[in-house]
Image (cartoon, rainbow, N blue to C red; front, side):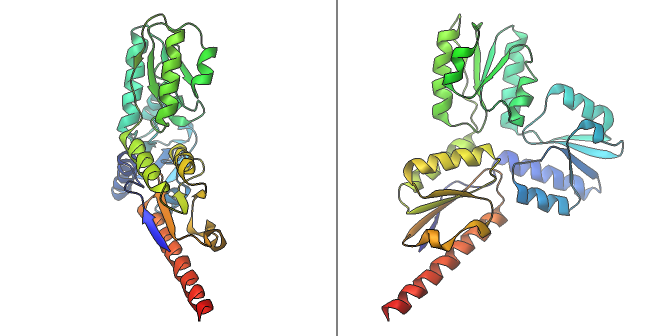
Length: 291
C-alpha cells in the first residue's frame, strides 16, 4: 500500500507563529494563559498544557502577573482592551490574515458602509471580526442567507479565512441583489487554506482512500474533508492514528493524506507511520495466502 502526502498540509504560517509566540513566552518564565484554545487542535493544546500553558474562557480569569495570549482567531477590540487592563503583558497571536479582515471591516464601518462577512457566525474568528464593525456587520454562512439581509449600503464583502472559495463567490454574487451600489468584494480566504484545498483536491482523485488529519471542531479541516469527498468517497477526518481501522483499507493500494492548518507535524508523522504499518501487515498477509 502506497501512502501519499498532499503537496501542502499541516501548520499554516499563522498557527506556527501563534505556537512559537507562546513557546517564547514560556521560555521567559511567564505564567501563560490563552483566551480560548490557541488553535483548533486538541492534541497540540494538550502538548502546550503539559508545558504549563492554561486555557481560560474569560478576561476576568487573567491575573496581574499573567501573560495573556490572544488566540490565532482573534478577539473583539473590547476583549483586547480588557485583557490589556488586567494582564501584566498581552501577546497578540492573531493570524495576520485574520487581522486583515478585521481592519477591512473596521475601515468600511467607519465610512458608514455595510459589511457582509461570509462564514460561520459562531466561529471565534467571525465573532472577533464582527466586533470591529458591531453596527454594520452581517455574518452569513452562504448565498442562501443573503436574501434575509436588509438593503445594504455600498457593502464590503469579505470572507472567513478558512472558507471554501465557491461558497464565498456565490455569496458575494448574491449580495449584489441586496446592495444600493456595486459591492467591494475582497477575497480574504488565506493562501494556506486555498493551497491546502487545491493540493488535497488534486491528490484525492488518484487514491483509493483519503485521510484528513485535524480537529473535528476545526473549520479548515472540515472544509478539507468536504473537498476530498468530492473526488474520493472513502475520505475520513481523523484526529489521531488510533482512529484508523485497518479493515477500512482492505483493497486500497494508494492512500492519500493531508492535514488541517492546525495539525502539528509530529501528529502527521504518527498517522503516516500507522498507515505504513497497516500496509506492511496487509502485504505480508497477502503473501502468506499466495504461498
